[in-house]
Length: 128
Image (cartoon, rainbow, N blue to C red):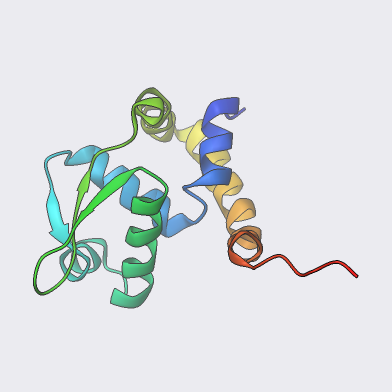
């Protein structure tokens, strides 16, 4: 069973398998400062989805985006309210049974995440 606060974090911010992979990578290397292209290479992922995931993680307060002249550099700097929850997520992911539950949940959350993000970013239509 997934911890309720971890589940909420997955639903709100870490809503894809790629984002989960990136957060775990930054947890493993908390001093890492890297561009999207460097992270994509390290994670064996394409640059486009990696860039989007990093930007969304920064918008959601898990990473910090420090822009440079060429491209943004990302580093791990979760908001204070996320620190303990991310540590619980990290510990749970290192337990085989809990890892299966987390991966299943993040796939479920990921299947509706793009719709939810689009709805949040959609301007309200005037009521007649």
